[in-house]
Length: 214
Image 1: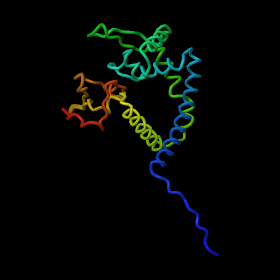
Image 2: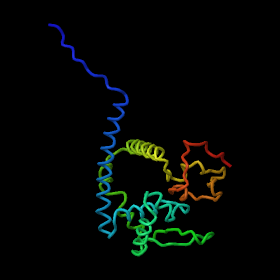
Image 3: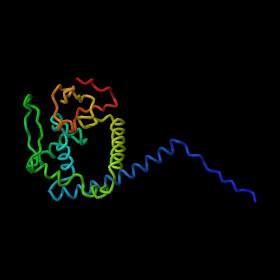
Image 4: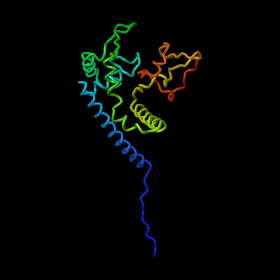
């Protein structure tokens, strides 16, 4: 019996790429919705809206160069007016304090209170996420984090957005021979705690050569 030949239409690379992007989008959208729902539920229990929780979380992670109203607006992608209202609610609830800059009194820094930090510690990361990855190995967690980082960096680059990365992964971060750290942008000495904070002025290492060590 003669074999029955079935013609299979070849799939173009750009079509495959589009299909993969669609599947990836669906996964990310669903994950985001689930996490957002859990954070919203936790925030409502504290009397906070999602945008207020997002601002609070950012301020719990950023450094002293990045805790201003303008930086919060940049990070959240919101207007200054919306952010101003959000910060006003957080301040009224005793979750943050406004402090004038030591060198420039026109600059206002937003500092979380102990109550504000306790709210974030209780609500973020969402309990649903912790339950989902509790059985993962360290290797699996590292791989997932690396992939998420690549996706985030790709989106930020495509949209011309600031990276808001961690200090020690920045082009301006310098480790000196004596073990000290320094920001080559501001020339200020950095602590180990500073190195682990999010910075508005972050510049990814992959986009430039690192500064030479002192």
